[in-house]
Length: 164
Image 1 (cartoon, one colour):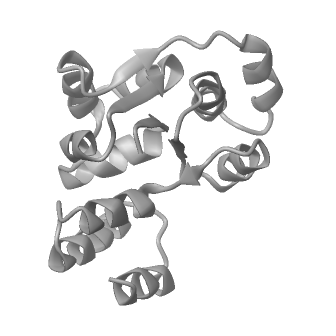
Image 2 (cartoon, helix red, strand yellow; image 1 turned 135 degrees about the vertical axis):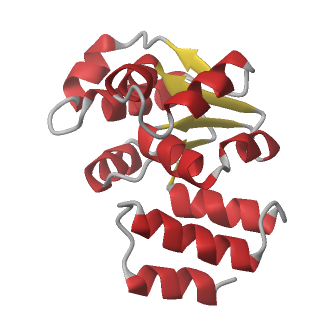
């Protein structure tokens, strides 16, 4: 895949794991909406992901983009948050190969718009498939995500690890 648009949850999750920089080995172009940047770097100042995202933007790993279609953002804003609405809008504007979202309502809306939706777990699987992380690392990553508040059931962890 060459162009991905990310929402805040995947940036925070990958920052928690120390894997944010590995994205450059999966995608040629990584984009985020300005609302996502502000959500992590302004509203989330001092929290996990802020430093990592600032560094990723400074080093041109991730590019922050302004949204052009404010009408679409406004149509998506209820029931979605601003970051999710802008992420979906940016993915349509940029004709992204994939959009990385974890929030269920946002995923449903993006799928209804015929976008190629993946989540943080799929990104971890892509890293595993690309041999960027091994089986013990992915299992440890799933456990760490769950410990830090990422919603993952034991069933999902078992399913993912069985498929490795």
